[in-house]
Length: 424
Image 1 (cartoon, rainbow, N blue to C red):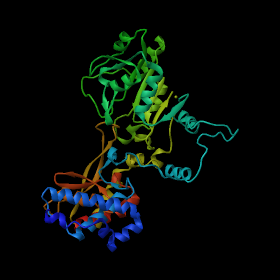
Image 2: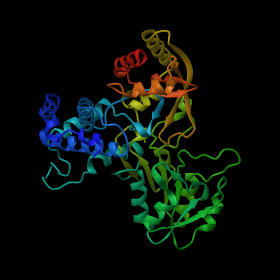
Image 3: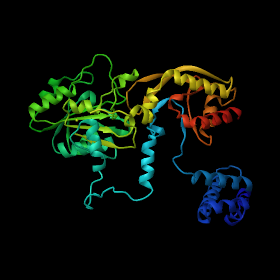
Image 4: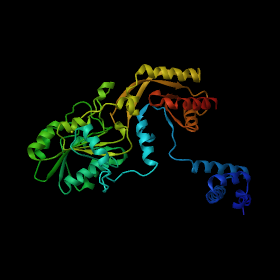
């Protein structure tokens, strides 16, 4: 037997170590037994691969580290300093304070989720949101499901199962997470009828494809996919007029759930839900997260305007923050960090599949690699490993932090992480 194997301690010896016993008080003996056995199995595997056996203290340190990582609450809060407002990997939209408080109130006990308090009979969970959605969008009815893909699938299954749905060839796209329009149609039981070309589709293309087997015409927001130049598409208004004359419903996968005029922020105009309904779309599908600033949800609305979003919904507060205010914050960060950092102009991205290709001017805190062998990647790694992880972006071997996506309540933690990472 290899001398490496002889050095492996028993489970009981590790469990009886005072440092592991302290962990048992926190995580329970059963949990630590599992973790110790898993660690010893890993040591045996490493020895079999020709690696040296770790010392007893190294094994204890590894077990403590694994315990802290394994039972740390997940996901963990972190600071988004990338400048990507709707960062899919970081949970997209932060919730407003009002939304968080409402969730806390509901989560602490029982609620009237499906109870009509007026008569004591069973109610519908949709009743809590339908009237609000109708008021905001101008729709006659609305419901909420798990996500926008579910909303589209539900609508198509109800309307077009066993029949045909007409889609512009330029809109038969794949969006994030494998959401492919042809696949969704197939799952709903509908047959896809593509019309037009990738870059130009006219109303006449839809009209010529209409048959007695047509269940609907579907218009799709193409998210991050955009064709620029020699292009044309039929509008929702045109399709609605055609559909009304032929008795064919028009469905609009609006995507992002935009309820505000994005041109107010110097961005391209994003289709708004209320505009689609006012234009005559029979069903509009959109996300409840992303630009709506809520939890993941998909909404179906079948026709009005919003007011408080700029102040209360974090992502709109981020988008609408004046550039001079961002410069002031970045210079404040620089003053705190020191001469290792510079304040430079840059761009923030909207992200999340919304407003494809759109960016907003910003000011960035730019930090060099400090002469370390790891370069900017090493500094970014140290920031990610902070007590409150900080996620930055890297360009030209410099770490860039964008104040646009950093909440003011996170600044102290961000600066602490920066100073620690730079000190390292």
